[in-house]
Length: 292
Length: 93
Image 1 (cartoon, rainbow over the protein chains, first blue to last red):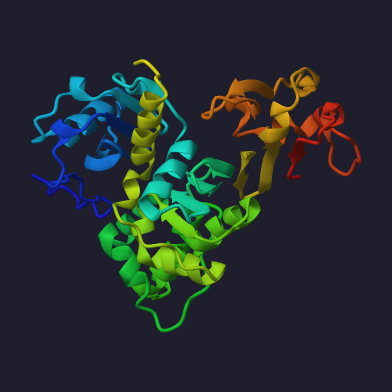
Image 2 (spheres, one colour; image 1 turned 120 degrees about the vertical axis):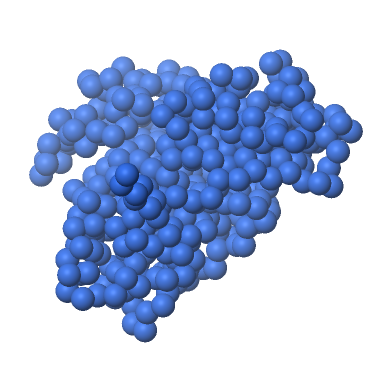
């Protein structure tokens, strides 16, 4: 039997629970479920404190992805779905979360989530998601002041990075570090199209470029790409990155260098920002008296 | 809020820029009726404000939907800009 090809793009799916919180003592339990194009997250909060979450790949069926993520977040907590007072669905599949009480856009949820994750000084949020990229400016309460989203092109997104990880047979979690192992920064590859960037990279490999240098050229292209979006929307300190690419030091450090700003260090997984924001929206809605 | 609806691709930047704070001051929203392509709509945003937005179906093709109102090389004021007394709508191209 033929061996299954290795999936270098595959990242670790996991769940997490805060052992210091007893959810039974909480007055308000809320949840946010972010069904994205590539990954899905479910976040549970107890009285506005992060209690548990799960982060996994989105399957071909959005409602099932939402259910699976939520079940995994609930696993081992002793909590049932009926214990949750209010759930907000967000992300591409936000209208397909069967148990959500309300749908909120991922732009508003990432803004609110970043405010919680990074603190009230954040003014510019760059969300680098699976298949889109968002530049968001927010106020001290995490409310959106301006936004710009690009979801027409995979350049500057997580999926683009997955394509490169597979092309170069480098595990996706190692791409960032590896891209920094170059003596001199190469010129970026095409920053407007992943397909063209891949073609260009194949040519560079044929010319004898080492993987590190090709990855540096791609990470640099990705940084160029998102900076043009950030500048269109305006950049103000403090700056933070959410989404999966926020974990790629190769892209983050190049964005920081070009912007002349250091991104704030996250307290939690950058991928959960949207779902976290959803759970915070849910809490605000419960406090406002919104019924399920 | 400044909402940028549209995209950036290999051919350029194509964004319809809406200042939703100005929309909230404008109860009539004449821009919706002025758009010959029916690109604009009134919606309730995430903060429960009644604002203007580009319809979902047009967000990835505004270059083409808004193109006929301002042919390349011609200095024409787009109909949506003309009726917006508060100057709340702009195009990036």
